[in-house]
Image (cartoon, rainbow, N blue to C red; front, side, top):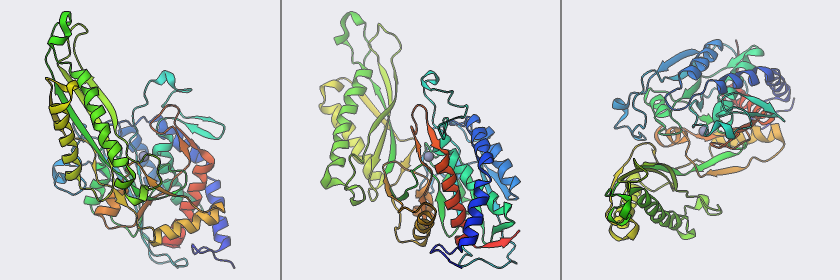
Length: 439
Ligand SMILES: [Zn+2]
């Protein structure tokens, strides 16, 4: 009998792979149904009902609960909400408790959280999509649709782990917690609420669509709102007014100086030393003005800012506020403009993942044995819910998920072959990490 480093004998590994492969049609059907349940911010309920049904169908104890922003407000990692309520927008958790009677596999006995987020970002103009964004369309081995890669495929992979084990008459010999959380794309308060509810494990994996790499680090992310007010005037003499919309662009170009400074080689965190452009500032939303023939008096802009681990949130806010204050004082494009800054949405610290944890070593081993290749390591320039497990929960955590493309763009897709491979990796990993018992 040969045993790989991940602790599975070759016969069992082959059985697990075959069980996952036997679920391919179910995986595609489940992912298609989840894509069709359009779960943009505030509209997560239909998709979460599907997740709760799936967890119940696996025999898990299903725990549905709302995020309580008042109770969480002073919890490290909390971000001020951008949506006006949490009612009817449950997190869904499914808990497997082992019977503890059957023999464990080699190693094993360690508990595991498999997390994913149900929320998706808006699809943009539907007419730009080759097929409607909330109708799954399979073409050339790719499943297209908003949220297909980011990250309903990952949620389906997590389900498939327990489904494949079950098809062979197995269950994990340690607790396994499946989580489907809200608001990964704007606050992370869904994952934070799971942590606050007491969910802990010996490791956590999030199958974000990071091309089957192992995530080693992620940037911090902050959203800054700025309300600019100027002076309205008749357009017969625009110079009599102060144009708040034009001022927003002037302000953003000043903020880009900070982005350039943080990307300078000397300013970088070593995890991104070789990256082309790790820190990205994005003027993501702007609204303003009320009449084409009036100089606009008001504009509201929201800027997304990236920053390095080890930089405090207060330090980032101070730097941004100083940049705004400096721009208003000095920049001709902001003459006569007032700027009020607000902090809603992501106030997310950066995070370094322990590269030497048993989680990272075990996942790398399984990836090697399934694919025959060394897994890439990824220092992400975005944030993920990994920060809650790693920074605030004291748990080893990383992302390992399928190949996909056009995330947050038009014609988002996930590779179905890669998704099935991720399901094989996660199933083998779970068998080795938790051990197996007879159902
Ligand atoms: Zn995601």
